[in-house]
Amino acid sequence: MPLNILRDMIHGTLPWDRLCALPEASDADRRSADQAVAALQEILDEHVDPRAVDAGRPLDDALVRALADAGFLAMLLPREDGGLGLSEHGAFRVYETAAAHSPAVSMMLAGHNSMGPSTYLPTLPDGPLRDLLARHLAEGSLSAIASTEPEGAANTGRTAVARRSADGTGHLLSGDKVFITNGSRARLLAVTATIEESGQVGLFFVEAPAPGFEVVAEHEFMGLHGAPTAHIRMTDVFVPDGHMVSAHEQWRTASPFAELHTLARVYLISAPSMALARRSLAWARDWVATRRVDGKELGSYEAVRCMIAASAADVYAMDSAVRWALARQGTEAPLWERDALKNITSMGAWRVTDRTVSLLGAQGYESARGKAARGVPDLPAEQAQRDVRGLRVGGGVDFNLDRVLAARLLATYYRGEQPDVTGPVTPGATALSAANQGHLAQVERDVRRLADACRALTASLPPAELLARQETLITVNRIVTELFSQAVVLARTAHTASADAAAPLAQDLADVHCDASQGRLAGLWDRLARDVPAAYPRLAQAWMDGESAGLLHI
Image (cartoon, rainbow, N blue to C red; front, side):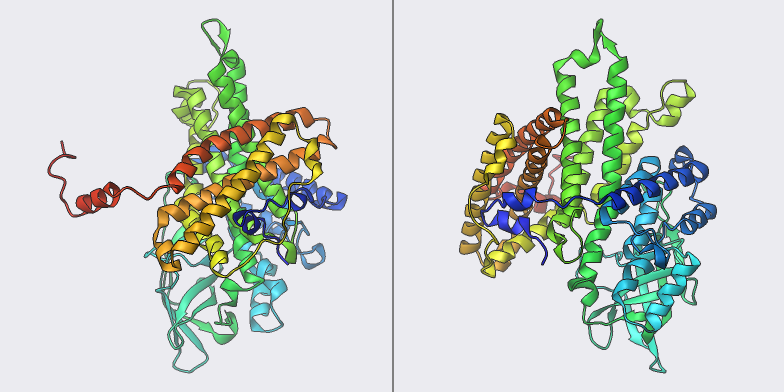
């Protein structure tokens, strides 16, 4: 049964014992991941010039062949089935390594492995679909999932349609799909479409090229350059019945397919977020170590020290949340916590990259190419910030994902669900420093405060009315994710205190993170306690209606 720490927290319980009970990776798992990371780095060094990719050079076919030959297109499959046999956290390390070199490679790999043949094969029975996926896996084909449409990713339905073919042997797919990772390079695409005869959404596997299948264009973004993300169009593309997943929405709502979509977001967004945050933190250290202002080392100034400490603590918190959420696999995988990783990591990375650009000043805003041309260290800080801004949008734009996840959490109140465990924090918390014990006590109080607020909201408002209060939902999710990130940081630090010589540094990392998080929470608590002032919707409507009265024009 999946763990559900977020549900427990939103109902007023901090399950400290389960937060601290992390399974240790085996030596074999660590060795496999180490070997995969080393092998990938060799391929990247040979085939990928990250500066050229950011300047617009596409990833070449030789790279894809090298990745396929080395097993990187089937990382989670056992070695005997042609994969690398990595654990989920081991695969995360591979994606992070790729992103540290070039985010485009990480996204290409994650887009393929997260929703490609090797992901579906273990869940499918013998038959035409399994044979199709096995063939493409053996051929080293890149794959993609094509779900987002021009009308927007937040819509629950799909405007792409699948109508029965005249001979009754399959369906004809028509419609556009946009922002499709690997869309221009994929030879196998999992396509969502509304089935005309039932009105349900089904998942169809399309081989490309095919009659009626067209790549309209590759998207050009402000960051994340080089990833083959495309707009595709289908006009009566035939898919035989044997190449579709049952239309009862198993692919969206039931295990194992719901787990696949959740893990895909972790790999696509959280891995490059981690990589770019770590790199930015290292760049900030290298920069500060070489600079002097008015004869004093830059790192001796209080404001600079605070920025460095805050970024280090953000990286520690991001890493702690990822380690916790990926430590368990299969039926114990904490799916809601994995969903929360998207905003925890992308927003954390945004704070780190933004501070780094500020610390570097004009050279932070200057491109790496411009710095290289005049002979100064070409740290690509501005590229990292461009890339991270894209990660805040990808996988569900940050504010809307907050809304969706909060609605899921609050629905547990309407269903009458209760936390799995009750009781106070266990004595294991004594391994924490006095400051961190204080933070943990505050998290407990805040968890109860959140539960009181959620209980009041759901008792006073019917579900439809609460769902319409989107700013309230966004605030609820931001509060619970701040509390979750503090909790996993403190749990990791308590474990480190008894097992690692780096314990004093871990205590400081936790202390800084919790202090900053509680500062963010102060504004969120205030927002949760009051309704949106009437001026906001009134002003928005007036502007949309063109009633600016010249006040906002030159």
